[in-house]
Image (cartoon, rainbow, N blue to C red; front, side, top):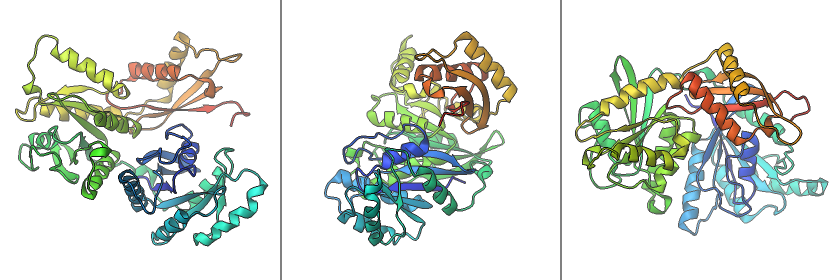
Length: 442
């Protein structure tokens, strides 16, 4: 069971990414005063007032696309609307109702889902009367906010949470099977790996890129554990996505990563690593998924004493966001080490679900800050006071600290690395949030 999705949509440059970042409490989307910066949907899991949901930032919705890129962005938004339980339609009070807003509103009225019409950039009483003009969109009462001044966001979230369907958070990801998505560029051998794992030709294998058009879920048992393998369509750069069918395939692959516990990122040992694979790696990391990097077609490589180390060093250089992920060199053709991927997945899944006692965590935290306390920033030095685990899949921690906003990124990385040294967590990302112990802090 996945968390319900709240999609933020609207035409370009109305502040969707700014709203997303305020809700997510961290800088995830690129915010730039230029239309069309956000092209893909970006997700973040949110907890508000004891309710958990996923927020989705989308590209700007152009109701009448004239360029291929805009057409792709519209497809992103249409997919977000299809999967969302609640829709936040963001408009700009400074521009008023634009023709595109009317067209989008017409589409949204057909969605038969809770829709919140949110008017952004309401800074000052001078815009009070302008808000009422948005009633003609036919989507109910406009909700005024200001992302620039962080005003009205809490009131908006209260209404959104009230509109969400009831869900049992404990059921999220509680399926007994271990879900593994097999992802990568076309023609790297994903279907061949699945066939090798299953010991039979369940998937069509063809040298032509794009043979697998949709994700295919196959259940099987290994070591008395139920697995679910998800073979996905190969993911290519957006400039290579020419038709609607392949656009859908790419979105299905992304959705498969989100629904999985572990992602197998498949690389071709006989080919260079491409930008698309870096994008996939980043998506796996930002979605908080455990993962393994599988270097396929290892049998085709002429080797010397340093070949293995050169490959490993290159992968670590190109995928720094997955520096905690094990690398396995396999051959789907010969079956070399393919079964090892399942054994390793069992180990990683245990790490992914690990919970550490508060006593052990705080003992580790005491050691961490005694060896290397947070550096002083100006006249203050942040102090890490207490840590507790608030979730698993992936392991998620909350640290209470004074002046947490003063903690630098390199020190946060140090804390993560020290927790790994203390407790393992191979193959799984760690998520750490900070809460201020100062009553004056926001």
